[in-house]
Length: 135
Length: 135
Image 1 (spheres, chains in turn green, cyan):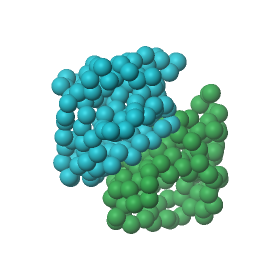
Image 2 (cartoon, chains in turn red, blue; image 1 turned 90 degrees about the vertical axis):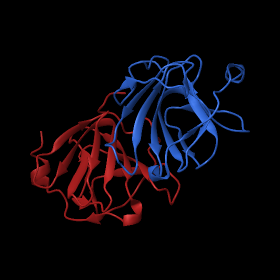
Image 3 (cartoon, chains in turn blue, orange; image 1 turned 45 degrees about the vertical axis):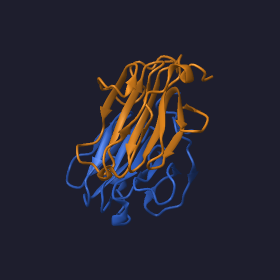
Image 4 (spheres, one colour; image 1 turned 120 degrees about the vertical axis):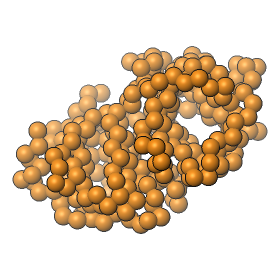
């Protein structure tokens, strides 16, 4: 399986697509931990070009990249390229987005930190004009 | 890379070996989260035949298997075989061990749940006689 062909996920089962106004493109989610976990973990698979909107987490989040190529960007900073084996510790309340490269599937585990602090706050989409500039 | 040749880990960097009386065989640990994280995550790589001793976690632990073949066993229950893509939610205070099959490397992410409850309690090794019976 090449890094550009991850449509069946890499390691963890891909789960189901879900409808969300907070994503551009199609995304799959497989919740790996029981409801109520103190460290909820989801396996998230983005089709090429798919990304989430700008958002913040009140307790932070950890991304563990298991396959493909994508990006993580904090507001006001350049986007970082991500590959399998990369880990991102997203601080609480920092505005950011993550998602696939235009030409690659992208898969990460997402660990919600301090879920008792509440859900993410969703903001505006990543504009096509900005996303399409990414190399 | 076959599932029997994971000596360079699968996805996340293998990290360093560490000396511990709580393991039989050689194990590598790569801490993926900063000190003080509410959800500490380590990438743990076991050589063939390597396993940890029986132990308990006061807040529980989550294992996310990323490569190879191994086992998870709770006290008084049969050992479960583990492969890439398997997830184990280990309850708080349940006596258990995990490690590689005799003939395979084994790699998992380990997420410590409620680390503020304190470190693991380490108990007796898994006897060779019992381990060698595993199929």
